[in-house]
Length: 437
Image 1 (tube, one colour):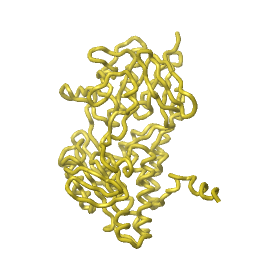
Image 2 (cartoon, rainbow, N blue to C red):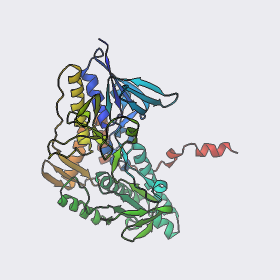
Image 3 (cartoon, one colour):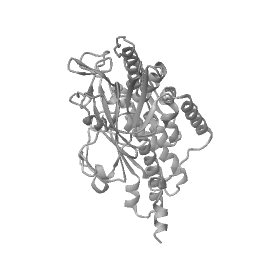
Image 4 (cartoon, rainbow, N blue to C red):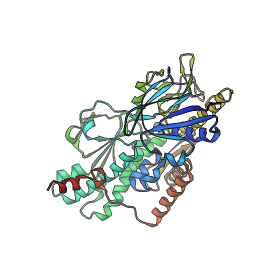
């Protein structure tokens, strides 16, 4: 029997967990699992705020693919097209010509990208918060702004450097804002020229509440806690322009800022536009509860999808509802999908995915948090502890769990690192300047 080839497109939460499970459950005689992703690692996104704030090492928020997927074939490249009618995928390796990879089953899991709007100046001055590179950049940038403010005698330059704007009041925006403010406030002990009241932290949210995944009272508590830290919370407000760093809001306010972080939602990866899979009105791949791709009532044999890029019916809710784009669903969908692929290869019927959302946890900085899990609501230190415990248990591999716990343990004993390594973002600049002379 010739082994089947299972092509996994993307190595995020869905891709990594699905490939791990498939490689463990299938022998080499049954199937070859091939994973294609341009990055050599999977990013555990819930740890991005902690990595950006210096609570853990950025390397410990990512999982190396080749070490974890030893029984899989890993291809470093980007899938540029999928022609399922021929069951082939076109891959652009990091270097060299494109190659066509045939497959028997494909797992479509390229994930999502930041959902941006055509706001003047956003492309030039905004930064997202979805990758480890963006998290490292934001940390260095914020600390660099403290240096700028401390060195200048111009009050306008100082005010602009110390104004930090975060657009989007979901989990990504709230955690990024709270963790970065916590880090910057901690760093001010080394800046006698500055005081906490010099900093201005602004949250811009288009709706009338934050953290829509939890009850309104928990969202209100979060806003109250941020207000106690003298943050500027703008609800029911939109960013209208940020040309040349001049932030203009829909409530009429205008001010300058060197830091504009965009965390206002996600959309399916644009890579899906180069496929022949059916999509819904939000451009997600349409799926059955079994995670099989479906076109109307017709199941597309050999095609599977899950996670942020897939429209998966939520069987715990009334018809017409779909699973939210969260890591909680993505990991469980990946495991169910892998089991279903194994079942189909062995001649059995696939099983529906059904999971009632357990709740949500969020960090609001060191020793501060909010949690709503299985109807139980917690705030403060207990919620922060639950946040850390839950995500430590969920990050893949024992290696990463140990490293994260060691980082946290050392942080109790040693002071937080607050040095900016801005040269990381343009390491050749000094050499290039020297070589011109």
